[in-house]
Amino acid sequence: MFFVKENALSEKDIEYLLTEDFNYSKAGIYNLSSDNGKGHLTKHRRVRQSLLDKENNKEIFEQIIRLFNEANSVLFKENYDEFLTRIYLMKYDSTDLGHFNWHIDTIESDELDTIRKLSMSIILNDKFHGGELIFKDKTFKNVKPGTCIIFPSTYEHKVDPVLEGTRFSLVAWTYKDKTA
Image (spheres, rainbow, N blue to C red):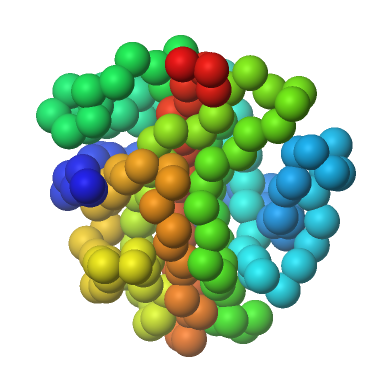
């Protein structure tokens, strides 16, 4: 089950996300139960990320929430406690074969009362080769910039290595009480 929508962000928002001087840092792998949510760097994932500030990006946050609401009303039909807590700008660069091996997005731990239920990826550019978003039964290749892909967080997926250029995407999640 995938919700796919082209032109999910305006050209103005995409241009801003691609040209603004964001403070990127190396992304790690997080295991909230064993490392207190601090994460550690690994070869499993080679990407830089920047957490978008909600205060300075209100319009983008509002658009992401509208997209989750639309996907939920059309396809998923669940009640969520939170539609979003964070949005990350991801930068996969060919100079270090940026990628993210097979994984699922669900995060749960004894410290959290919620679990990720829906995942979102918005592809922001097409000036790269490789970097396909791949699921067991579907591959998103040569995706038009601004295309939003929403899927259950339990779907195993990966981002293939970027072989040329830099792949930019925006990612976000919905959350639900894990006892529900």
